[in-house]
Image (cartoon, rainbow, N blue to C red; front, side, top):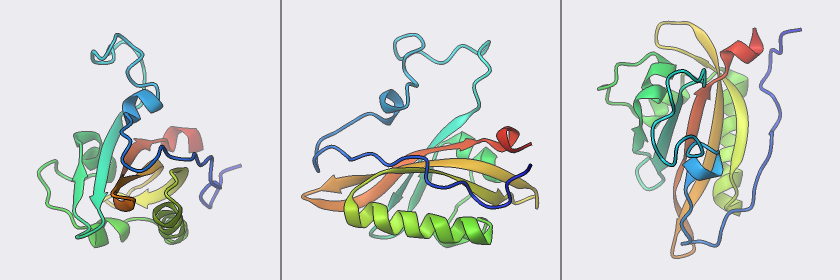
Amino acid sequence: MKPTTPLPLHHSWPLFECGQRFDLGRLFGLDELGGGRAIPPSLSIPRIGSWSCELADSRLTWTDPVFDLFGLPRDAHISRDEIVALYCEESRAAMERLRAYSIKHRRGFTVDMQIRTVGSGRRWMRLMAAPVCERDRVVRLHGLKQDVSREYL
């Protein structure tokens, strides 16, 4: 049976105290394969990209796998509004609710979202997010995005 709506929230974790640093790569076990070296190409691990969004101006920063996930050229200038428009309606609504909760309560989340690519295809994306605090205030969200479409076939 194919799911037609986004999966419910997988988990939410309490974040470290505001201002305390942590490494998302270590948090998600990405550096356990060779002490910080690149993941060997022989392992069939789906590409995972990192992203961040500055709350003050909604400026996005992405690594190459995130551009690839949305079907965008890697040198594309992107706005949050343009990218949010690529989320399917139910996924977009869920993402915005989780985003607001994350900012308000300083908690991370992981959720699967359905998106449209620039080429009009559809994909499922696992969105992992965590707020970054400065002086007891959330100033940015950052995390990982992964294409999980194969899990929905």
